[in-house]
Length: 229
Image (cartoon, rainbow, N blue to C red; front, side, top):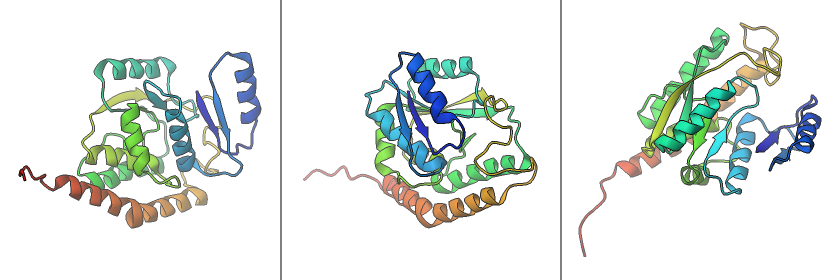
């Protein structure tokens, strides 16, 4: 188990250490010295996971949105069907309207880069074949704000075998309903921090990420010569 603690201000670090001490788990705990954000922390965890020679890599946020039995079923289906990536398509989400519109917009961003429309472009629940993940990590920037969007796009540009599987997204089980990342005070109105993140992410996407993905897509579309010399 790889856990990235991104400078949590609650009792996360203490709780995790207690759990580790009480269980005989092979656990790696990364405590960031500064708050790096969701994107870079996600990439940190993925890079660390590859160092442990896994059979598969399950990536998931720590909000407690998903039911354990459904996560287990996703793993079983991944092993049986052998895709390169499994994307958990969130259903029954209890999210504010502005978050739902943001989710729809992320699907559009992936479409502009890859020509394919995912069912859930920014899902935090993904399972990777290690070889496919290594290829992705070779291409990804460690400071990317929206790595899940890059991964959704890159996998489609490279025509990876992707399994999109519906999974119920429940209310947060171990954190405030509105979360703590965005300093959200009202359920239906986005916070300034959230709006700023969206602005920076879109700017980074169209200035850096999107052009790079388009280059990769053009290279893959060029017919490979079969001439012999």
